[in-house]
Image (cartoon, rainbow, N blue to C red; front, side):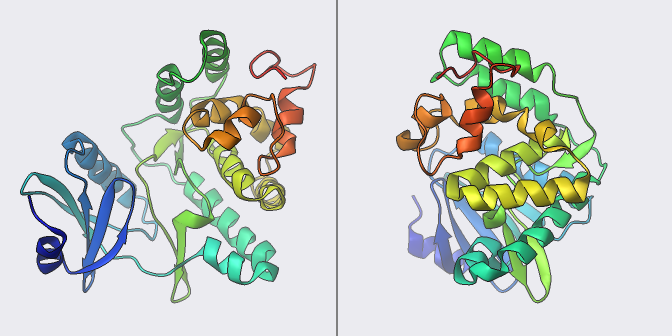
Length: 276
C-alpha cells in the first residue's frame, strides 16, 4: 500500500484531509486520494457528475482522470483555491448580508441552468429516506408520502449548497463538492441550504431564507414545506445532539426553532411526521 510520502511524491503537496479522502496538489492539478477500501463506483460516479455539471459553465473544478494507485482510487481534477465564504463571514460578520446576497444570486443562477443530468433530486432523496435505518417505519412512510408531492423540476440543483462549499478567489466565486448534484425542484434544494445554515446559525438561516425568497420570488412557506424531507435525511447522520430536535422532541439551541414550530403546526401537512 502506498504511503503519504508516495502520494506526495506523485501528486504534490498535501493540501488537506477529509473523512473519505486526502487531497494533494501540484501547480494547477489537484488529486483526491480516497481511503483504502472506498468503493470505486463512488469515485467514478463523482467524476461523472462533475463532468455533466461542467456543461453548465459554472466556475468549478473540472474532472480529468480516475486512477487506481496501489489499490487506492484517485480522482484528478483542476485545482481550485480560495477562501470559503464561511471563513469570510466568520472573520468579517458585518459583510454577511452582502455575501449572502452573492451566494443566493449564485444559487439562483445555478437553478436557472437546464442541462442533462442522469440523476433526479426527488428520486435520490427518496432513496436516502427509504434506507435511513434510524427512522422508524411510521416516520419513514410519512416522509416518503411527502416526497411524492415534490415536483420533478428541471433545475440544476447542487444538493449541498452553502457557504462552506463556495470559495472566493481573485474576484470570482467557485462552487465545490458537486457529488450530490441532480436535476429537480429548486425549492427542495433551497430547503436543504436553509437547514445547513440552521445547524450553524439560526440568524444566518433566516438571512438566507429572506434573501433567497426575495431573489427567486419564492414564498417562504413553499421552501419550508419540504423541511421534514431534509430533517429525515439528516436524522441519525449528523451529531447526536441535533437528532432529538430533528424529531421535534427537544428544541436544541443550535437547531432552528422555526423547524420545530413549523413541524408542530396543527394545520401542517406534516402533522405526525415529527410529533412533539
